[in-house]
Length: 511
Image 1 (cartoon, rainbow, N blue to C red):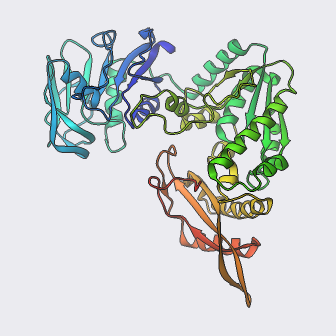
Image 2 (image 1 turned 180 degrees about the horizontal axis):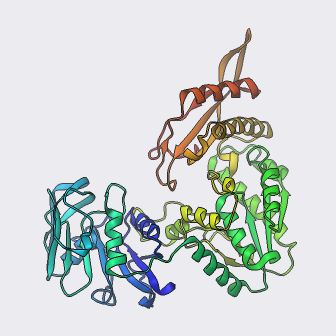
Image 3 (image 1 turned 30 degrees about the horizontal axis):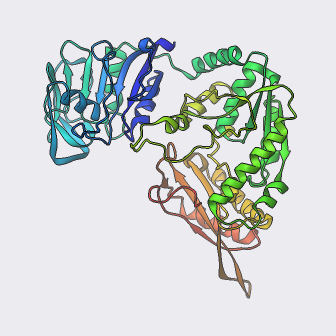
């Protein structure tokens, strides 16, 4: 199967991951590599795609890939920057555009009987995002499509299986983008569509058996989708040699520690629960700065985890639920929007005193694929559909310092909100939801008494990957009932607000 890969060369575009996601949706396996780190063995790859870039091909420091082993030898699709690169350095002309070509456009000309544009007609909407434009096609270039403002929107190069487009087929605004990718990859490059959740499970289990053998593996479970799917894959491969550790940091949702532990045991996993609530809360005492809280939780987690790991004799491996976006962020092209935005805790964050080899069964797949793999493994729908939950837990939803009383209040509020979403059939329409305890008191009236109590904010967003997110327009009736229930049942809260900020500019979490 590995010889049918598609290679995507990343020039730093914010859309590069989207290209990979669209290719995978066609049941075709692909990998992203930086343009300046092309894999040595290209035999594994059946086709190559060049991504867009924030750079201009006309600038002195324009990204320069070595395409000598690719161009004319493998089917090649050049997107946006890639299309301009091929034109600029192969006898064409790229110049600054008079009008900034950004946003929706429609094809005004499509060459007849062209396999690349099969089932795509004039008028089809495409998405542009560039400030340069191709004025003259490269040597042997043949025009395939235009828009009203962009004469050379798509071309091919005679004598090669090379195609180039100045728009982005990977974004949803390009209505026939997926058809175009399919025409190129399936019909022209003849890449087989054999990348499915079942084939991934089969191949991964086989590889894990070969890699790990009879060694013992330790895995930290979090209750989230990624670590759960990683655990079930490993369990399928090595059974009882997998030792799972589920740490309660005291900052989980109400009853989550008990419920999730029970669920894991019911799945036949070899799991040990460690309740370290006191240890975490005492380490967090008096800390208000968000970054300090995160670092403290990370440090204590590693200490607790390491204590437990030492109890597993002769363990050779540490398993992690790292997924592909974490890996891409860690190796991406310098200077582009896809360059590392945050240091991710799963990659390279291993402390020196845990001298274990790392195994990451999910490191090449995206979040939506993790869920599909989980379904193919027969994991409970409810577990797979769980909203993402931050590693530091409720600590970053309690603004200011942490006390056990504040944790209790937020757990109660959060439970009412989340249970309500499920009851109203809204939970699955939301990507992530939670409550935030604010460091302010407000005046209220209960009975004839004036109160001076805490304020909580509710947050619900829709997103596909957390990179961008919109607030969810929850029904007023639902918000009204939830607010009443919180104020009437949670001692210490007298005001509920709803957060209607999108990301960007706001983040999903408040800290």
